[in-house]
Image 1: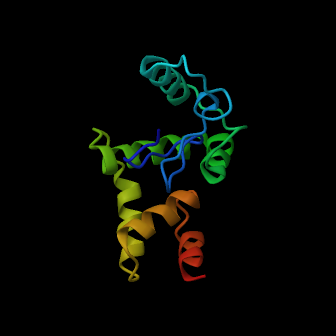
Image 2: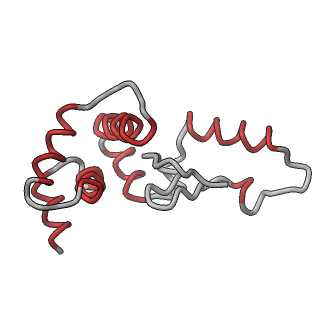
Length: 127
């Protein structure tokens, strides 16, 4: 089980969609049903576990900058899943970085990973 739609969540890889959920790994049992897996996944989405992350960068943002995490998650939901909330200030930052010659997707990931700090994201893209 993995996400094919990109998501910004501490327990799901923002790159591969892999899910950090114990019943999908060491707690798996043959008696598990699709319903059990989906309910567990729903619970994980509703209550992240940043101390046991799949994506350490997202988990750090979740723990240290909750407001930025929420805006980033909304932005990714809008871009990758057609969510209703646009984050125009974040979109403007992506446009600025793209104006420096970087690909939109790479700009989004770099900015998301560096708390939307254009200078830090640009340094990361150049390294």
